[in-house]
Image (cartoon, rainbow, N blue to C red; front, side, top):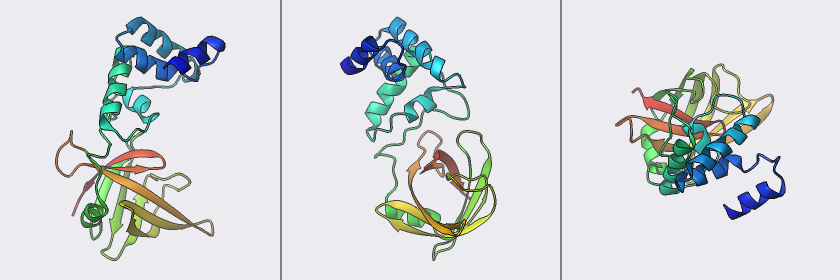
Length: 200
């Protein structure tokens, strides 16, 4: 925090550290400074913004650190915005490769894009053949049906697609959603966390 304050003092026009200072001041109970820092940050980000999006900027693995960030942002004046919310995606809720394989291979999953709530579906065979339809949950993918293949690597789900003549491989993490109960999960792709359920 000291470095962020010093950088801000040296260049009062910079907003680079305003979001970090907002949560730090909020967690320390310095509500006025927290709110001022959040206002400063919002000048560079005028679009809708809420706690889940703010915590997403700091991808720590430790769930306790993420909780402190969320608490600080709440004190600074950010709120939750359904359907998105602060997510407990950390090493305690992360699935192992074995769990991912048992959950996804030979099953259909249906979910929503985290930011807009648009529907998507993936069907995986036991052997890893993959069909994705609906909203894309990966960068540089179209919102259409795509065929690919899946496998498990280093406790991650890896998908390979042919796209524009090239092969693209994307490996993702899978987390349990403890707040919403059984059969609720998140797939963390390069576009963010996407909620899903297993249908069969």
